[in-house]
Image (tube, rainbow, N blue to C red; front, side, top):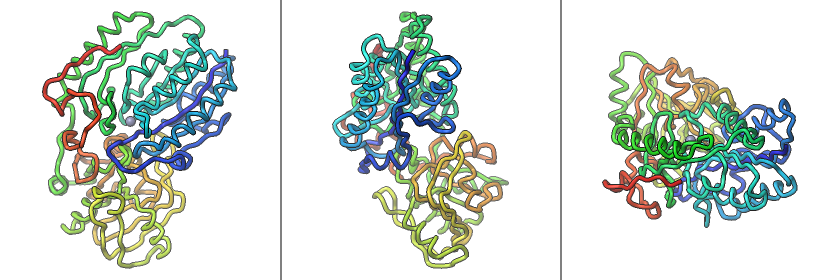
Length: 464
Ligand SMILES: [Zn+2]
C-alpha cells in the first residue's frame, strides 16, 4: 500500500488588498518532499500522522511538499500554480498510489481561483484515478464547496476552536483512508448548506466569514460508513439546529472604551480583551492602534497590548537598545483600517531575536520582537505577523501577563485556550480594524445570495 501526502494552506481574506506571494509561504512553512516537522502542527498534522502510522502499519508514505502561509489576502496566481504544480509533479512521480492524504486549510483563494482546494483535488484525482482514496484534513474556517466534497472520498475538519485537536483529527482521517483502501470502510459524505455567514466561539463547523467567493458560508458535513440516507438526515437536522441558534451564537461585543471601562470595573486582573477586528489569524495586518492610543490617552496603568506587527519599529527598538528612552512611532501603517500611528515617549524594555509564542505545545515563530513601555501601557512589537495565542507572547519579552490589570490581545478565539487560564475575565471588543463582526459592513459582491445576515430570508438545503 502506497499513500502520497502533501500540504497547502492559506486562509484568504478577499476583502484585504494584500496579495499573498510565494515568498509568504516559504517564510511561514515550507517542507521539501521527504521531510516532516519534528512535531505535528495545524498545517501538517495529517501528513505527520500518516508517516508515523506507516512505520507501525507496514505501508509506504511518499511525502510530497508542504506549504502554508499566515492568513492574508488572496494568493497570486503564480504562487498558487507553482505550489500546485510542485505537489502534482511529486504525485506523478510517486504513482501508482492507493491513497492521498492532503492537509489543506480550506479557505484558499487565488487570483483566478475561487476554490484552490477543489482545483488541487480535481487535478490529483485526474492523475491518481477513480480508485485512489483521497482524504483531506481541513480547518473549520473553510468553504466546503460541492466540488471538493464530490471529488474527495473523505474530509475531516478540526472540531475544536481554538484548534487544539489537529493531531486527533489527522489520526481519524488517516485511519479512515487506510481502512477504505483495505476495504473495511466505505465513507459517504452528506453536505448541508445553512446559508449563513457567522463565526462561533465554539466547537462546530463555521465557514470562513471574510472570503467573498460564491460558496462562502457555514455548512454541515457528515461522514457515514456507507449510510448516505442516514447521513443526509443527520446533516439536515444539525444544520437546522445551527440555523435556529444563529442569532445568539456569538458572544456580546463592546466598543473600545466600553471594553476598557468594563475591565477597569473588575476588582482584579488580568482582564483579557480580544481585539478581534485586527486578528492576523483572519488575515488582518495586526497593526491597528486604536486600543493602544485609547489606553495611553486615558492614562490607564498596568495595561499591555500584543502583538503589534511593525518590523520597522522592531528594528528601531533593537537599534536604540534595551533601556533606551526615546520618542517612538509605531503601528498604523499597512491599511486605512490600521488607524494613525502611535507617537509617544517610550522606553525599550526588552529585545528578543527570533522570538516565539506557544500554541497547543508547538512553538510559533514571531520573528524579532520588542517590548516597549509608554507610561502605564506596554506593547509587544513583532516582525512576523501573527495573532496572540500563548501567554508567553508577553512573558518571552519580559512582561509578566499575570501581573497586569488589562491584556489586549489581537485574536478572535485562538488566544482563549491559554489566556482563559490566567484571566479574571475575558471580553470581546470590536475596534475599527478590518475584520468587523457585523458581516453586513463588508462589501460582498460574489457570495451566492440569499445568505444570512445579508438577507433575512434564506433557502438552506442539502447540497450533496
Ligand atoms: Zn480556523
